[in-house]
Amino acid sequence: MSQSPAQDDNTALFRKAWTLYDAITEQNYMFHREIYAHVAGLLRRRHAQGGYTLLDLGCGNARFLAPCLKAAPPAAYDGVDLSAGALDEARDYLGGLANVSLHHRDMQQAVESAASTFDIIFTGFAVHHLDPAAKQRLFHACAAKLTPGGQLIMADVVREDDQTRDQYLAAYLDTMRTHWTAVPPGQLEEACAHVAAHDFPETLADLTQMARSAALPDVRVLGRFTQHHLLVFSA
Image 1 (cartoon, one colour):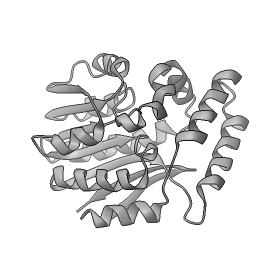
Image 2 (cartoon, one colour):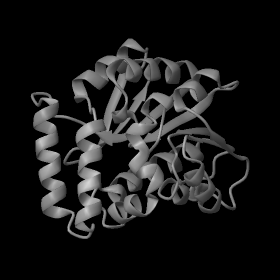
Image 3 (cartoon, one colour):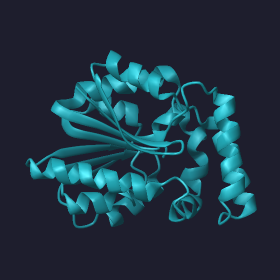
């Protein structure tokens, strides 16, 4: 969840309160179960083709990706996050996998400075914190670090094409306050404040344009659950 130094304050809520994020995901409010079922299928298909390498940008504690990886083990896994606490938890969730490397650093810098290329770059609910220029820079960096035939897999929130950010926020915050009933009210308002201040989702059209300008012309929507999408970008 946490990313660049410029976004360090933006993700302070989830870096300091993983229990809140776990409460949200445990109730499946962000459709993690459906999204990661699709991710598991993608990784199984890739694993069937032979060994593959995976870079996980904004890996957090890897709670949801870890079972997918264990069902289709990569030859090497690199996870990147700014939260040391989340990375400590990730070591436990990723236990049993071979060639796991965890990096406490900014995801943009990590992908740009990577010494190797990757068959899959994955990012889950992290990119929407970036401003448009940073998103475009990330697309270019990922495209440069993918092997031929590689894929950028992105789980994230997306605005409707005719929806302003304010309209998106109004709808999302209403959903949170109406349906996220298992989250204690005080913590829920903290989460709402975080979303209102720091979430900058793009439209699918804008993400498609960014990807294509970075030489990733093949854009597929593999799953859509209200605002929550699973997207695959490839050359």
